[in-house]
Length: 349
Image 1 (cartoon, rainbow, N blue to C red):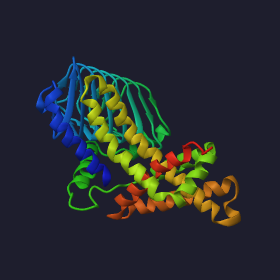
Image 2: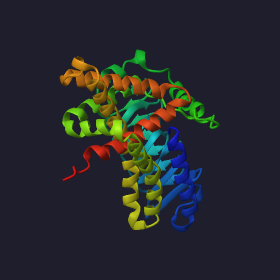
Image 3: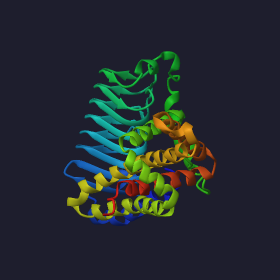
Image 4: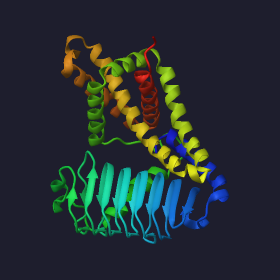
């Protein structure tokens, strides 16, 4: 995903590969690469760093990973639930499709409803959606002019995205997505620049807006986080790094027990949520620090918003720097997770 995420998810996949024979009931070829898979009745649960699913499932499919791809050979009889950074769906889904991801491409047949939470949603030329599409994203979804959506589409500024002039030529979206988000990002693993991290302008605005809302809803916690950023940064970073590295390992340990499977997938959800709130916390704390040091201009609500705006710009530029961007992202997210603890810990009596 970015720097440290590669190492953490690789560790998780390696551990899962070693544990899988003890409790996996599905065929070993169910997902390519090193994967952890469980099957309960007709339902399948699968997790891996890079998960490519290419077979039939009679029941519900729950998948998690850094990259999750359902190929054209994937046939899902029940609902499909996916949590990942990047998702591509090209198979046939009989039920509803629910995706939590940074980027998702839907280029297959979905007979139920589609729900998306993330930053970037695209529909390819072969997409056929029989139900409704509901998405929650700071950017408008992109639809190829060949895609078919029978139901209603609910999302922000969607009328703009449906413009034919803005749609990519038929047949090009799938190849473009694979080239930009698979080949280019994963072909070079020799240095810190691979795979790197890219924050779009809408994404930066989205995180900045969350930081502004956080600072106004929790001003006391934000002030403590600002002080922690100045005096306890190393402690905050250590706590956040421990959380980032330890949660996937804990997930695998919990998943050993069949009873622990629901808890394991909840932990998988907490990991990306923690990264989101960690980045938001860093922006809020850094913004409060900036506004407190620019004198009269930093006073009041406008000064706080201006400080967060500057903090967002600084972090955005830092993340965009080749090679160093992954380290900037790691510092911002890990420190933010630790700052959340500092900001909300109980005050000494």
